[in-house]
Length: 102
Image (cartoon, rainbow, N blue to C red):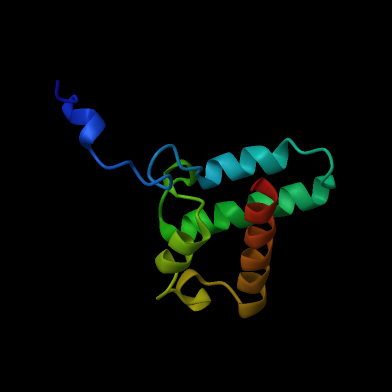
């Protein structure tokens, strides 16, 4: 007896199957009462800024740090009219949110 075709296919890499998005991260951070309200707002704002920079809705941006790094490889803050300090804050808050969301 042969196996159905689907069971012989290689497994889908977890990053492509129901991978969390930045919208998921915003929801997780926003719902965590252990994070002070201001920090939750700042993280949400940083992630929204990242979405604007990438030109895509948060629900379409994979939350994997390596993929985000690749997406931003050729980006400079000046391209979006952001100062270096603002961009550093966006990156810092994004890292916090990604780590916290797991």
